[in-house]
Length: 299
Image 1 (tube, helix red, strand yellow):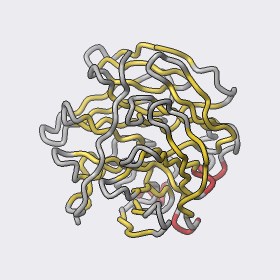
Image 2: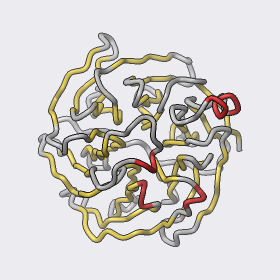
Image 3: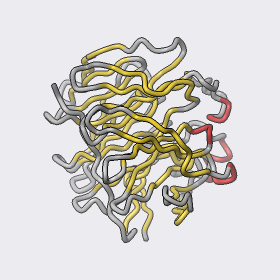
Image 4: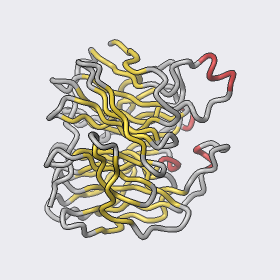
């Protein structure tokens, strides 16, 4: 196994990596930097677009466009003009913003929210119960599927398309729902993984072809692999900085794990030691392949 930095010191709070199979590029965001990034690991071509508010997530669409959640809005980024086109604004609770979002295998856009953080406080001090998990359908119909969320984060779907996995970070676990791929309905919520607080705060998540979950551990220096059937931690990949935020599979064979992290919450002494904070990492030679990043199905 090899852990390497592929882009160093790219921002404050890097999040939401999404691999575009069509262009073989990695998309990711910097929440506090209000930036959407694109990076081709082969050509090293890098692009970025600044938006008008904190950005929560980025995905691609079935027509090849780039969909982002910004503040309370969902819209499109144009890489050529560097502009943002708003598609809709969500009537969400005052004082909240989008956080982690992801597309399901049917092409719906699942968008989580959380309370807007005081930048001087840690994630563990975020006001609880202010967030929700929304589902945006292809016809722009929006459902609020989960309420009273602390910090809405990682999402993943099982290979049989019958289970959705979900992280509400301050519950220190991973939950599962029964999932109906035809309607997008979820039911029967239960916790399948319990995370020890000494391991950090569970953040972003992805799934591999063996249906094992890979969870980024904020304040935990690691990405951990879990078996959601047993709750067992199978493996832990360590990084040289502690605030690991998210991960996704990429590369031509989907055998590379791309990992984001944050530097915003570190003090000067920590930053001196953790000089790769705010960087983009790649992990190779894991002996496992991942599931593709699903895209939003255009109307």
